[in-house]
Length: 488
Image 1 (cartoon, rainbow, N blue to C red):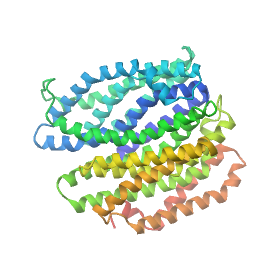
Image 2: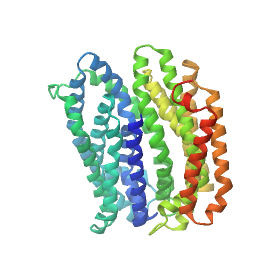
Image 3: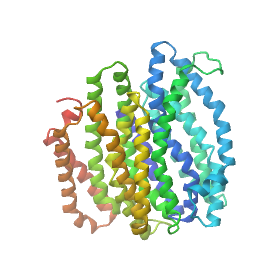
Image 4: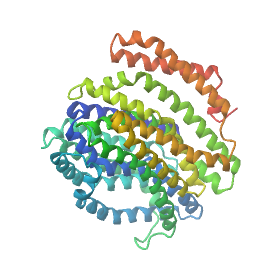
C-alpha cells in the first residue's frame, strides 16, 4: 500500500499544481465552466475505472485464471477487446456531443453551450486512453505493481498544466489549449504503463473470440459500473443545477471538489486498493476470519486517516484555498465561494472513503448489485436535497447535499455488511481516533488567530505541520499505532 500511496500522493500534488495553473489562467469563469462540462464524461469514467473500479471486476477473475495458468491469455484478450471497441465508442461520443452536453448543463447561455459542445468533441477520445490505462493498472496491481498505476494520472496532470500555461496562449479560444493538453496527458498515461505490462501479456491469444473468462468479468463489471456511475450522477446533478447560477459556479464546485478529493484519492483509494486483493483472496477461499480482519483494518485506517483530514480542512479551508488559487483571474470572492463549498463536501469525506471500502468488500463477496442499489438510493437523496438547498444556499447547498448523500450510501452498504460478517468495527480504535482528532483541531484553533495575522502562507505553512505533529503525538500516546498496523 505504501508504494501506491506515494504514487497517488505525487499525482494528487501535481493535481493541485494543475488546479493552481488553471485558476491563474481561467479563474472561476464561464469558459472553464464549459471545459468542465465537456470533461465530465471522461472524468466520470476515470473515477469509475481509474479509482479501482475495473480492478474490482477484473482481479478476482484474473486471480483464478492465474491459478489455471491462463492469466496472461486473459489479460491479452482483455486488452485486444478494448483496442477493438474503444475507437467506435470514442467516435460515437464525439458525434453525439450536441445531444448530451445540453443535458449536463441546461442552464448555459448559447455561447457557453456551443463552446462546451466543441470541447466535448475534442475531449471524448480521452476515454480511450483512460480505459486502457485502467486495465493495465489493474493487471499490474494483481502482480504487486502499485506505484506506476497510482502515478499514471500524474502525467495527465502534467499535460493539463502544459495546456493551461503554454497551449492556451496559442489557441482560440484559450480553453482549447487546456483540452489539447489533457489529450496529450492521457496518451502519456498509456505509454507509461506499457513497458512493465509487456512481460505479463506474452501468451499467444487469438484476437477473436475473446477469452471465455471475459464473460464473467463483464458480468461483474456491468453492475459495478452501474454503482459507480450512480455515484458520478451526483456530480451531473450538481453541474446541471449550478449551470443556472452565476457564471463560474461549476468551476467553484470543481475547485472545492479537487481539495475534497485530495485526501480521498491519496488515502481512501490507497487503503481500498490495497485491501481489494486481500478481500478477494480470502473471500474466494472462504476465510471468513481473514476477510473480517482485512475489513476491520481497512475501516480503522480510513477513520484514522480521513477524520483528521476532515478536521484540518474545516479549520484551515479558507487560507488553503487562498494560498493555492487566489492569484491571477481567481479573486477573493472566488475564494469565499470555494471554501464554503469545500465545507459542504467535507461533511461526507469519511463516508465516501467507507463507500470505496465497503463497495470493494461486496464485490469480493460476489454481490456487485448491492452497491448499485445503495448508490441509486443515495442519488435520490442527493437530488432531493439539491433541489431544496440550492434555492437557499446556492453552491454550498449543492456541496452539502453531496456530503449528506455520501453518508446515506455508506450506511446502506455498511449496515448489511456488519450484519453479515460482524465484529469488524473496533469501538476502542474509533474512540481513540476521535480523541486524537479533537486534540489536533483544538490545538490548531488556539493558535490560528495568531497565525492568521501573517497571511495564508504562514497560516497554512505552520498550521498543517502543527496539526500533523499534534495528531501524531496523540495517536502514539493513545496506543493507536499497533492496531492500525494490524497488531494488538
